[in-house]
Image (cartoon, rainbow, N blue to C red):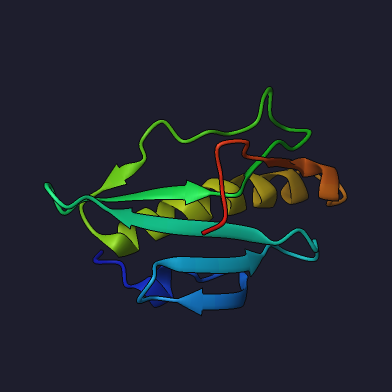
Length: 114
């Protein structure tokens, strides 16, 4: 399936979106932690990398999830992986019967706001 930027943001509450600058801010489920994503385009390969403000660590996980692949062929793919890298684990914890907690989000120390 060819993802679009709209598809990539499915399942989250969008707070701010700037496709031109590649910046997105959203909420997951009922939690109030604002997750930000920046998409960065390589000038040499035209691939897109994402940087996310938070990672997630739910009770069903051993450690916080950090994506091992940050570069993608298209911006929509990068954004989709940035979002789903949080939502899939959030959804898994909810299905396992856990009550959502703000503490599930872990600030990414290498993230800086533009």
